[in-house]
Image (cartoon, rainbow, N blue to C red):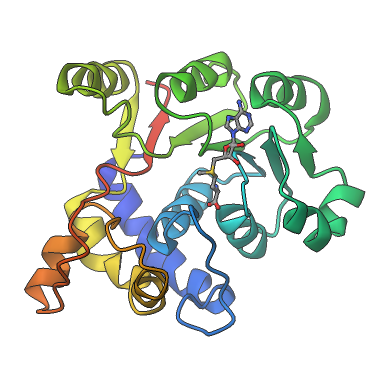
Length: 246
Ligand SMILES: C[S@@+](CC[C@H](N)C(=O)[O-])C[C@H]1O[C@@H](n2cnc3c(N)ncnc32)[C@H](O)[C@@H]1O
């Protein structure tokens, strides 16, 4: 039986205490990196990994490691990361991952199918694509979604391509017609868990004058809570859309 939206929200209740126990997004030690995913999005990844009993987490697009390191802290299982260019600070920080062959400086179109076909013994893999983006992310997803071991794929910035509404509509429609989908802009999910992105994230944006990007619906919640800031104008759109086989 495939999970439904209700299963995801129910699993979120179960995953939350485990997540907060390992990851404290409001702690001053919590790493925040530019262009990194939101904590609520990492939480959604953890929920999906729990729900699908994931043995191996695979990420495409590490950049400065926001999602990769949160996921490696949360999961007691191997996390494999790919990026065409591994940032120097990641190299300096993560000899463990390099020594254990868990981070690869490689194009995911080559590396992920190879990893799935040749190197993994375990049965359940979850994949998160945070680069490439748009149709290329979907192309990458399509190269591996039929692999029996792949239980879900999360596509970040799934509001892309943003060039025009028709293109966006086609993209969303393709996802929704061909797969089971669930997105982190689910209003119940946002209502319950948007606080995970509070405080330090907003300070971080403000300190660096980066106002302008917030998860979908967050502006409304900020507005409702009377914390509206005119620099925080843009919504982030449906952020991670998870797809799994019908
Ligand atoms: C937005 S950043 C990722 C942010 C990261 N997930 C985080 O939370 O901090 C996108 C990354 O995807 C990488 N990328 C783009 N196309 C790729 C591909 N085909 N294979 C592997 N990595 C790719 C880029 O080099 C870039 O570092």
